[in-house]
Length: 88
Image (tube, rainbow, N blue to C red):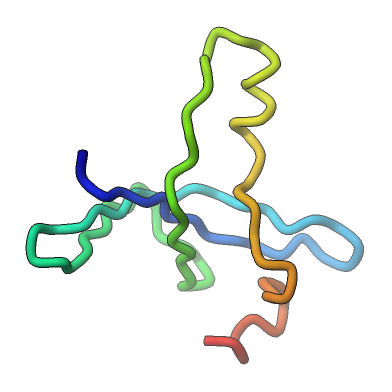
């Protein structure tokens, strides 16, 4: 299988609220080592986050549906909020 990743965008929700993660596409590695992105949406903030794909759980298992809806783990020291422009 090709090396594939998930493409996300993150929108800050405000003081004391969790950021909103939205999956906007998929990235896959080409034979020459370059990457192609297939986007289903464009982020308003212009920022994309590329993460390793997560394992898919059984979609018929109601307990796994909640886990699938959660955003991927992220680095705690990376601020995706209002000052994120300073980090790019």
